[in-house]
Length: 85
Image (cartoon, rainbow, N blue to C red; front, top):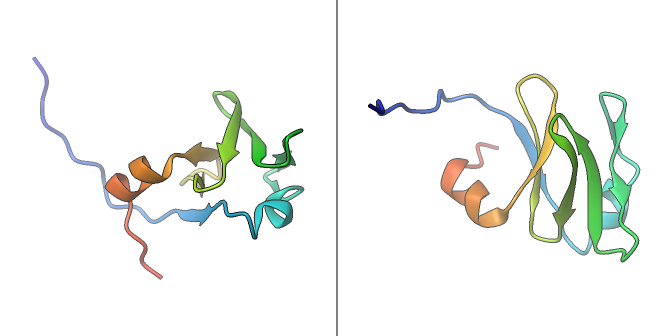
């Protein structure tokens, strides 16, 4: 029933959320959508195509091939992506 497939190799941009850069990332605007600092100060709120999502320290924020942004847990990021530069 299912067919094995492989993701096409495309390069996207990503940044890991750290305690050192969380305030810098807050307020960043990507395609008219602002990344906002959460009330607790240790999460970021991101308006994604699927709705509002949160990114915590160690999560990654990925800018996709169509400019969309979304958070990704570090464990999943490391299984799916490799840093090229």
